[in-house]
Image 1 (cartoon, rainbow, N blue to C red):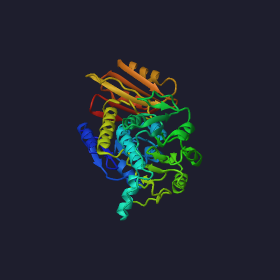
Image 2 (image 1 turned 30 degrees about the horizontal axis):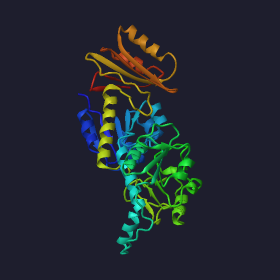
Image 3 (image 1 turned 45 degrees about the vertical axis):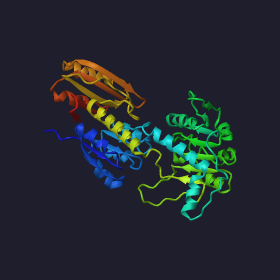
Image 4 (image 1 turned 30 degrees about the vertical axis):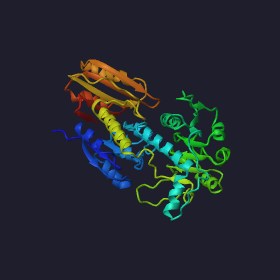
Amino acid sequence: MTTAPKAILLESIHPIADSILTEAGFRVQRIAGALTGADLDRALADASVAGIRSKTELRAPQFANHSNLVAVGCFCIGTNQVDLVAAEACGSAVFNSPFSNTRSVAEMTVAEAVCLFRRLFEKSTQLHAGHWDKSATHSHEVRGRTLGIVGYGHIGSQVSVLAESLGMRVIFFDVIRKLPLGNAQSRPSLEALLREADCVTLHVPETQQTAGFIGAHQIALMRPGAILINNARGSVVDLAALAAALRDGRLGGAAIDVFPTEPAASGDPFTSPMQSCPTAILTPHIGGSTEEAQESIAAEVAEKLVRFWQYGSTDTSVNIPQVDLPVLREGQLRILHVHRNVPGVLGSMHTLLAKAGININAEYLQSNPRTSYVILDVERFEDPKLLDGIAAMPETIRMRTTSGPELSIQS
């Protein structure tokens, strides 16, 4: 009797992932928080699949020490917490959910814009302190205000639609030409947008180009009294420069959900230059943390892991060449082979199969500069030496076989 494969889920991933993985035949172990060091190694020791969020880091040692780890699911947008090159070198596929929390982040962004223009956070804080201030000074409707969106991707464009529905005028800047939605208008540069917008909201990825993207110089270009919202990545904004602009009244407010350094767990100490800025809304990286978004993310990533486990599909993988063949036909064996991208590997595999009299019924190969991944559907056979021969090819990184939902792993 074959032991059911194990999936380890960390960081309180939504329970819908458990049901999807369990239905696919996995034994699911759930751990509430993030793990590091020896605790992480123990959890990964017999796991075929690992599910993490943003706090657990999987680096080269984890992949080198755990050849059993076939796939990793990042139940979040980003994959910075995973060494993708190391995972690729071991033939471990990594999946994420880049768009499932789009609506949640967009709604929070627009809500923060309303709160900042109306100074609701300040008024609430004053009342908690026992101070009644009914003044309308510096309190404005969002209707007619200009919203500048930096990064007009899935989230930025959703923000655009929601903001227009409230009567805001929308401008945007993106390094790639994008089709505007509604009445939104593009601007030729970040500087042009900063000079024009009453509110600037950031929706850019974390790259070398966006690190420190908004610093003292960019903040100085913004309109007096403008507000800045960052629900993107913590490295994008110089928070010391932003705090200085808020304290001296240069900017009217800010909302920050992401920080350069964030605590590993709830309850851990947190410090930031933004603390004690009365016109700043600070939230603990919760832009996508709604029950709806977390359920959607969990379902999407769990289903990707199941398709990879059962059929070898790397469609939407962020590190392995993307290959996806139709559902395996009855009576067929599927060979899933990750190998170094060098000449002659397919020829060697074809020769081994041909010498054994095995016919290839379907084949799909994709490569990147380092790695190739091929799916071969062949007539089912019982010769274990043939599979051992393919697995033993010097170019092989990882090989598995499947005849459907029940999958066996070949070393």
